Length: 393
Ligand SMILES: *Cc1c(COP(=O)(O)O)cnc(C)c1O
Image 1 (cartoon, rainbow, N blue to C red):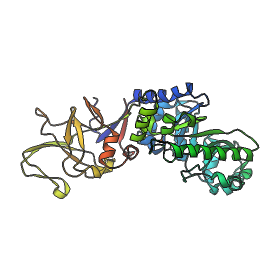
Image 2: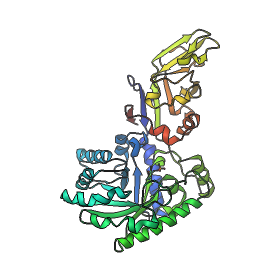
Image 3: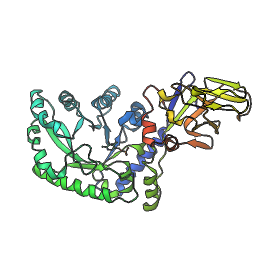
Image 4: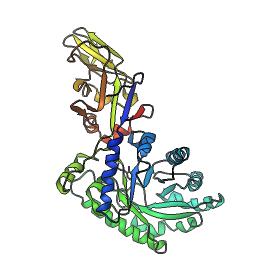
């Protein structure tokens, strides 16, 4: 294990695991002939893994990157121009303003039309005298009831597309599943696919029969529903080696000939700040919620809820030190944790703790942390803040 002394805590991004996950999703192209573009989702600072680190690993290996904001899309273009790399397809999934739309067109970044707020974009964009047309994907709401146009009223709702024709080119249509990762039986997903197809038919007719690029599958559907891979996929959580849910993994075990090998990419470690012995009867941490039943050796770790370590893990979690589980004592504080290291042999002043990831023969997964904190692995990783150092290993 590498150490990064002087850093409060750091995240290790395992490049070979990330590449192995990319390879897994690539391999589906040989069994799904329509599936031509591998898209990966880098929103939420690449699910907390660090946009730059992940970009460095996957830029040359994927066909599309999906981001949430124009800022992140521009970050990708900056990254490319600094390194003289070819422009990858970049799609902004989130909301944009008219002036951002003009900027994105210039940078050849694609955007998503998610609702009627685009009604006035046509007239406003015409004033901006774009040199390049902005490429757009139309979001069809097939049942998540978040972004998108409902198939039933799509023709009327999208009448404004004709005002966009001078400045924009409609290139794709997308939708997003509501519960593929929550169930082991996918009736609702099948219904969503039908509604997406209905919406697509109407949309393509509205555009004079133009065939659009179609994409609906996030990780769970890409893994479990080959018929949903369509032209492109948008793989988020599983790019990072995590299962979308226990149900998805269970379904995969049941319905797939063999369980895909997703390899977790992230480890989170820190060096202790203080190691010391406390006398029997000592109270540990805010609220004095833990009292030492005997003389206890503790390590104070420079990590807290400011760093994305959930406070709800207080008195519940453990960390790994030299492969041994060391329990958290008392509460998670803003910048500190206290762990019990009494059982560790020998004399030492500093230790390296693993908060998430493998250490020796043991591991703490994002799922384990999520279970302890009563949330999902997505939230655990996405909430790891930007200020922590990411290192590619
Ligand atoms: C977040 C998101 C994805 C990726 O979902 P995962 O479950 O992380 O794979 C795909 N598409 C859209 C529209 C999203 O918002």
